[in-house]
Image (cartoon, rainbow, N blue to C red; front, side):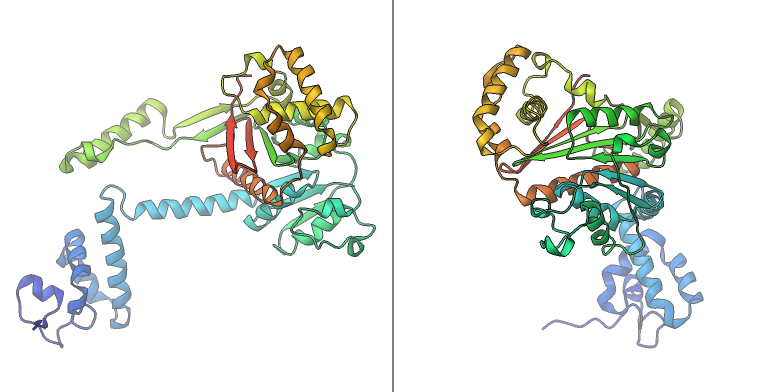
Length: 413
């Protein structure tokens, strides 16, 4: 038969008699024995009792919960304790404010860029400007989950106008604008209104020229190019020169005796401050789109993404045959294969490094899921840039919708 204890955790730890009229009984019953042990271990009974007596009875449960939470965090992480959570929340608040000043420009509204717009609007961007004068067709509605698949409903409207109306429903406070005309007709002053430019559904020449404008501004702005062809996708990033805050990597605590952990971290932290200043920062250098695609294929690193090569074949094929961007179909496969061989000969590159299976993926039907995945990845990377985080897309990111896998590519350009 189990014996029920009739003393509160405080009296039990001191081996004293206890009763229901004792001041701790109502708020620290025997069931909270573990809670009190942690509080006593971190703060001590005297400190806890002093604050307990000052608080009105109706607030004592909240006081105990607060003490218990801080004690548990200090036991789990003796170095940082609750300050780790406070710092995290302060960073989240600062990041939210920083995002609230961002002005994003999107030209070319394909499925992936519309998905990106949904994420960025919900996140709370200050303003979003859309640029795409193509009139609504059934083809443009395909893969666009934010628009009703009814061409008649959107008659005589551009894709940018329809997307603007749809995106405003995700965040009524977001400032969403539509800008008509060709992006290349914008002046440098127009570009300076934005801090991020994303383009899609455009030729290699237009991407190169827009990227060049972004780099030549007094304050260079972030440039992203995204394209989906069949079941393949590519994101190119150019931040020109981007500063990233490094996280101080402290000594692993399991290699240091318990009594020396705090001293060791303090010594190391002071050494890092003395060597590098208060904040450790690194600078990521990016190349332009023109420099990236001009790298001779025979100098590319071993194991380079096959998607990168296939995308170069597709965009050169479209430019040579004056085809609409992203409109390759299964009927183009043989011509594309022949063109690949010619291009490989010109680059003095092994034909077998670009398989026929990869070219078939280029000319296949674009799967809807690739739009949502690539759009989310693009939004995630831009948020990381705004928040000063590490692990950004450096130059190229490629995604294979059939294999459901992505790869990063950093060219030495």
